[in-house]
Amino acid sequence: MTQFAPRARAIALRMARHAALASVLLLAGAATAMAQTDTAVGTWKTIDDHTGQPKALVQITDDGSGQLSGKVIKGLNANDQPDRRCTACTDARKDQPILGMTIISDMKKDGDGWDHGQILDPENGKLYKCKMHLEDGGNKLVVRGYIGVALLGRSQTWVRQQ
Image (cartoon, rainbow, N blue to C red):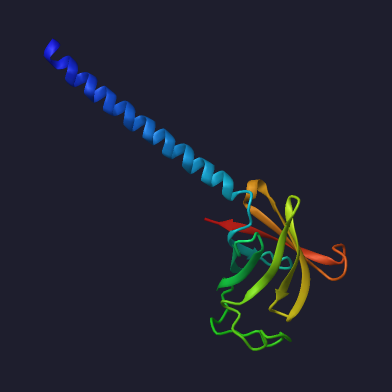
C-alpha cells in the first residue's frame, strides 16, 4: 500500500491546486459582477412611462473620463421600423435614423448618480436636462428628463439587460 502513497499525495495536491484556482476565478467573477452594479454602463431596456411597454435598447458607455453617453441599439416596439428617423429633431440629428442615435450625452458622476447631461426624446425631438441613478442593486436605472428644475419633468425606469 505504501507504493500508492506518493501517487495519492500528488493527486490530492493537484486537486487542491485546482480547487484554489477555481475559488480565485469564482471570486474574481463575483467582484466583476459587483462592480457592474455600481455603474450605469451597459445595455438597458427602456420602458415607456405612459404605457409601461418596452420601447428600445439603449447602450450606455463611458468615454474614458467618466462621462457617460447612450445610444439606441434596437427598437422593441412591434411597429418600429429600422429606418425610422427623427423627423421632429431640430439639431444635427434632424432626419437621422433613430437606430444608432446618441440620445444621452454629457452625463457626469454626481454623488450616487449622474447629472448635468442631456437626453433627447426622439418621439418629439425635444432635448431635456437629464439625471439618473441606479436602484435595485444596479438592475434598474431611473432616468429623469426635465426642463429647468428636476421637479418639472418625468422619469422612466429602465431595466439592465445581461
